[in-house]
Image (cartoon, rainbow, N blue to C red; front, side, top):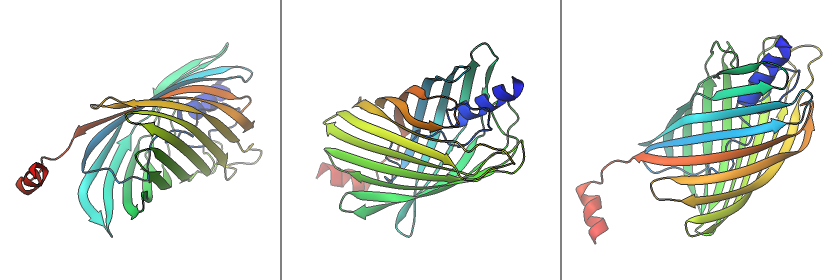
Amino acid sequence: MKALAKAAAVTAALGLSVSVAEAGSKLMPGISTGIHLGFPLPEGAYLISIPTYGSRDSNPRVDSFAAAPAWLIWSTPWEIAGGRLLFDTVMPFANVNIDNGPTLTGFANPILDMQIKWDLGNNFYGGFQAGVYLPIQSDVGDDWASFQGIAALSYLTAEWQFSTTLVYGTGRSGVEGGPAWFNADFTAIRKFGKFELGAVAFASTDLSSPYAGYQKQSQFAAGGLIGYDFGAFSLQLKLTTDLYEDNYGGRDTRAWANIVVPFWSPKPSPAQQQLALE
C-alpha cells in the first residue's frame, strides 16, 4: 500500500493519474488547455493560478487536488532573433486521497523555465520553451532533476482562438526514477467579446521504461471550457474526462480553473503616452 500511495501521489501531483506504476508526465497533462502558450505576452509580469480537482474510478478510487498556486511569468523587454524572451517558474502542490488508504500532501518539483515567442504574422504566434525540474524531498516529488522542452503554436483573432502545445520530458532509470514522456494539449475557443466558449483535449504517453516490468501509461481526455475577462483578471472553467486510458487503473473526471492576473506592466514612455493621446 505504501508503494501504491507513493505512485498515486506522484502521478496525481504531476500527471493527475493513478497506477501501481511510477509517475509519467512531470507536467500535468492538460494544464495548458485554454492558455495560448504560443503568444508572446506584452512586457510585464503575470500570475496564473490553476487549481484542479478530480476522481479516478480505479480500485482503489483516488481523489486528488492539485494546483499551480502561483505560476509566475516575466515577459522581458528583450528579444532574441525577433522573438520575445520570457522567464517563468512554478512549484505545484498536491493533496491525494486513496480510498481506504493514506492521504498524502506536499509540494512537487519546482521548475525554472525560459521561453522565446514570435509573432509569425497572419494571426499566428509560436515559440519554444526549455526548463529544468529541480529535486525536492517530499511525498509527491522526486529527489532527482529532469528537463522539459515545449513547442507551442497559436492562432488568435477577436472571434476565434486555437492553440496546440507539445511537451517532451526526460526521465531517469531505476525503480525510484520515471519514464521519459510526451504530452499534447489542444484548445479551440469562440470569443463573444469578453465571454468565451470552447473545447479542450489532451493526451499523454510514456516514452520509455525506467526499469524491467514497468507498464507504460497513456491517456486521452476531452471536455468543455467557459470563460470571462473581468478586466483585472480573467477566469476559465473547464471540465474534462478520460475517453481512453492504458495502465492508469481507471478513467479520470476532472474540474479545472485558469485564473490569469497581469499584476505589473512598465509605465509607458513620454513618446508612447503622446502617441496614445494622438
